Length: 151
Length: 151
DNA sequence: ATTGATAATGAGAGTCATTATCAATAAGCA
DNA sequence: TGCTTATTGATAATGACTCTCATTATCAAT
Image 1 (cartoon, chains in turn green, cyan, purple, orange):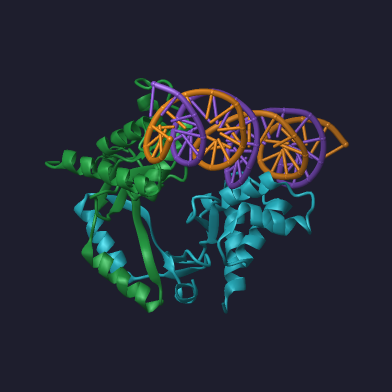
Image 2 (cartoon, helix red, strand yellow):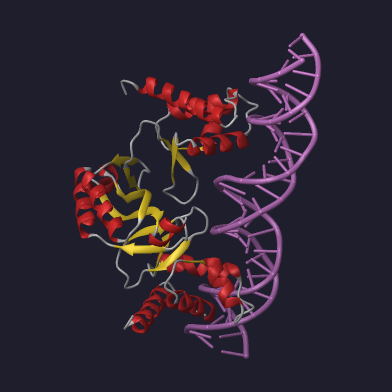
């Protein structure tokens, strides 16, 4: 929270750098999409970004938003989460270390957590199987404190 | 392996019972779909079942297969796995206790594992958050023994 | 500033997996 | 056997992207 602004600025700079390496450009469209994505902390999908930006930038195309979130993922500024099997959602990954999720089936709210013991044990498991891991996801579905009582 | 035939038979009986409760029928189509699904042990999608059955039952409709796998999931004979974000795949769940997955990004092979410590720690985590869990999934992506060396 | 080469955009068409619709058919049972 | 209800198969429709392509924007070198 204290240095969110800084982190977001760095993230944008980093993105710009990656684009330049590939002779790609940080266009106005890309910039506003990325800025909005970084600003919001939730799990956003391309459509939400599109709808939010359309007011101020009526000529922005939806395809551009899809293209840009794909770039963000490739640049590892965003990581994809897909709890529902419907829309692809993305969360801020730059300066946000790995974490797992608790997902409430009542209200849809998600909670992040990390548990070092689980991470450690996973390393043991993959070693047993001769497996070289690149990433993992642990998602626990259920009902949060509020929803378990009221529903 | 030893009692797979028995288990599959029980699964089918169980499914039949659930259908009857809801005044639904175990039609010929449903039966052959379910039998094939139970027989195969992998992660199958509706289309694969459809294509496999089409030879012997050319009049079978694809929609019926989609409808039936949905029923299987509702009956908890099948559990959905979706590693790729593309097709929905289903695995045999009747008499198959919970497990997690190692998924090879090279060859697509999956390995199942269970680790009681991880399960235990998860219980602690959800308790901390006042969360009532219904299910979870832990998926580790990476490269299997064969693929890590050859690719 | 102008040009030329290249990258990116927006609008709309296309794709893919799945779901809905609906007339025809099949089952259960009175 | 007739009547009611469930199910089916064929096909249209949907949702969530993804591609295409003519147009526009950007950069680098005149």
